[in-house]
Length: 224
Image (cartoon, rainbow, N blue to C red; front, top):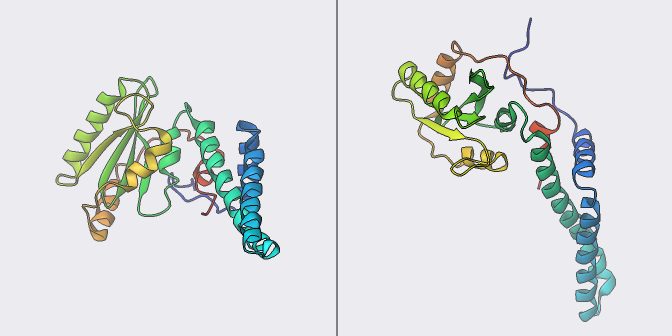
């Protein structure tokens, strides 16, 4: 039996995710580890100097060690997130990859509408209603309008939000797409969301390639 389109992938261990992120960061930003070390060293230096002024440099130096590691890890997560988005930018289905990496509250069906030019619209359902995310050329807007009309006919009364992913004016960059989706106002109850998802199962989507690699987990892998 074929796997469902939106089936949750097998969960990786945190160690495996960190290894993937490390390789990705090393490829895209070779100097990132130096910045991480600099953040750790600066934090440790400030702790020791602060401790010296209080006549306890060793004590504060020990306290500064885990804090320095936290600072270094925070810097690493920033580089990892940037590298993850850079690795899928421009690929077919990049926006779908970002949408499908949202862990809770949203269900994404990729490529519900696709043109000959490989412009495509993805559908995400959550408490904010139906969110249609388009990516592709300038002509993708007409594809988005068609899909919105389809949703309004099929599910009248359910709020539909349109988003175009991209770097042009009025579009939402990939790195800000998750944040944009999560900040949308909640308009449906949990039961209503469940009903909408059930009705949309019959509509489905197309079988399109979604960029593989660190994206669904790479963006989230650092736990801060």
